[in-house]
Image (cartoon, rainbow, N blue to C red; front, side, top):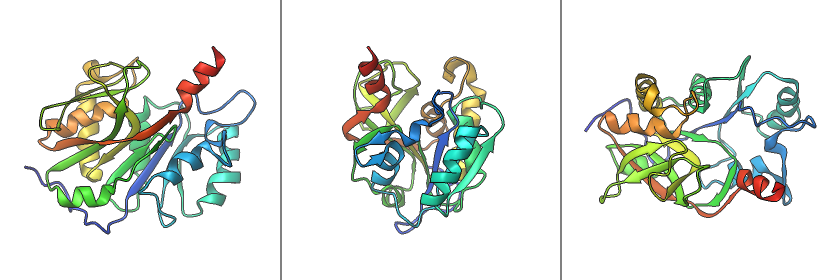
Length: 247
């Protein structure tokens, strides 16, 4: 068992990082994916604000590319709706979502609290109390929200008979446990250990030359921590829906 940094308690706040610097974030019409209408709200509202761990007191960190559409969105929406938000601006495309999330870690408000990386493009129901789960399991290093699928669009997690993660792969169907795009790390220190492991094993863990967040969980396990999954229910993925509607 390892002890890296201060252990969070059940009342500790969460660090929430939302990477929005991918090449699919901005649309040709000048809009961005996060403001896509979903019912009476937007995609960001239907994902981030529906998470059971979301709180109006949160200090989210958004990571965006420094481009006109993203600047407009930050000015008109993010800083208006989330006045406490912190924003990291990237001048170029990063080397994958893992790097974008790492940029966000630089501005987290609570380095000893869990770090939740939420890609905010998959809607689901969940009742998980992430801070409480980490507080009650001292050797838990990471969590991932998953649902049943075999679609090659997703990342996958393979579990052992005891429910602990054995392996995580990006866009490789190694189980029926598909990632819902939300990952939690015990704290910043564990996040950085996981990132270092991805860098050290880039040839095996990268996808199309990029580093993603899901395979970082292999690094959590490699450093002696447990990684577990939590169920995401009633999943609706806007990426798959877009492809279906366009076909």
